[in-house]
Every structure is written in structure tokens, then in C-alpha cells.
Image (cartoon, rainbow, N blue to C red):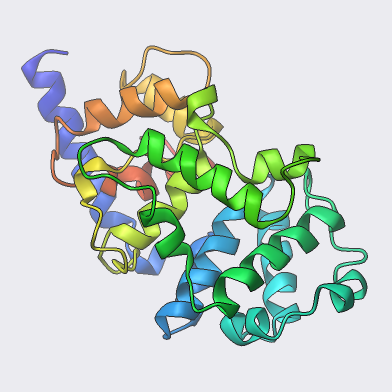
Length: 262
């Protein structure tokens, strides 16, 4: 990429980053954690919102609205008081694409175990984090720990595997990286609740929309969405902002979603 092309791309990236501020958030699953002020509620809502952030955007928003309504818009209180037996009625007809009602019951049982004991998603994630390596191994360990917590080690359904992907097996881990962006970065969009992890090590959440735009921008030469693609895109974005390369994610994603011209 020549200097002039790189400069032009940097200018556009910065322009779009500034344009897609808090006022342009809708429609996006990030809207849901922004409805809370308590950090624990924000973390729970963000984790659930990222976990269910796949498929048609309208379907995603409908699912998350229903899910938060079931929790009576009190995520931490709901999880602490959660009863697995009762959940069979609560989530009886609740499904979201690859997630069955059984998968969702298991997810909530695992989250109940975490928050009832005074633990948190943050503590679970950071228990496998080492500042000397990137997030690939950490996410892999986190997914394994979460599969154990939801009680699915012997019979891991397709939905649970999709819920907790493994970058060591090539997954781009779009939803995990999305959740991390929300938790680590700190601006009017993202919450900055996990300051133990520097923004410089974040990996861009890649889905078909982001992949398509990034191919057009020559930020990746790869065809298939994968962890390798996510690393390549992030590495190229670091050339524009080595401290906070993933800050461009929201703009790139929404340009793709809204079928805008970059």
C-alpha cells in the first residue's frame, strides 16, 4: 500500500470513526448494556448481548429485548436468584438460531454459579490472561472454562460450542472479541470496565460485514472469516493506531450492515 493510499485510508477511517458516535448506535446490541449504570449489570447485559449477536439484526434485537424482559431488566438480581428447575418454564420456547432452549438454560445456570458465588465474567476471563501473550490463548482457556461451568463437558451441543468458540481451532470468535471491545475500550460507545487489558492487544470482531469491507479496503487478503483474518485486519489497523486499533470496528461494521459506501 503506497503512502498516498495509506494516508487516504487513514483519513477515511478517522472520519467514519468520528461519524459513528453514540447518536448512531441504533440498531446495535450494544444498546442494551447502555441501559444500565451498575457495572455488574453492564457486564452481564454486555456478555449476553454479545453472545446472541449473530443473525439478522432485527432478530438479534428482538431476542435481546425478550431476554432482558425475562430478567425484568435486573441482570445481576435475576442471576443470583436464578433457579434451574424454574428455568425450564421460563426458557421453554426460547430459541435463537443455533441456541436451543436447553443451551440457554445451561448458559444461565453457568452465569448463576458465577455471580451467586461473588465471582464475575471478568474474573473468569482474567484468570487465564497473561500480559506476555496475546488474547488467542486466553479466549481459548475462557471458552473451555465456560463450557465446564455450564455443565456441558460430557455432552457439548452444537449451540454450546458456538456459544464458546475456540480461536485455537480457527474460529474468528467474533462475539467474544465484540464483548472484549465493549469491556476494554473506554469512550462514549464502549465501557472501559476491564482496564487490566490494554486496548492495543484487542482483536477486531470479524463477521461477514466486516470481512467484506476489509477486503475492499485491502486490510485482508484472506477469503474465509477466521482468527487468522481477524489478526491480519487488526495488524493492518495497528498501522493507523497502534494503541487502539479496534476503535474503527463500530464504523466498519455499521458501514457493512447498512450497505454504505466506505
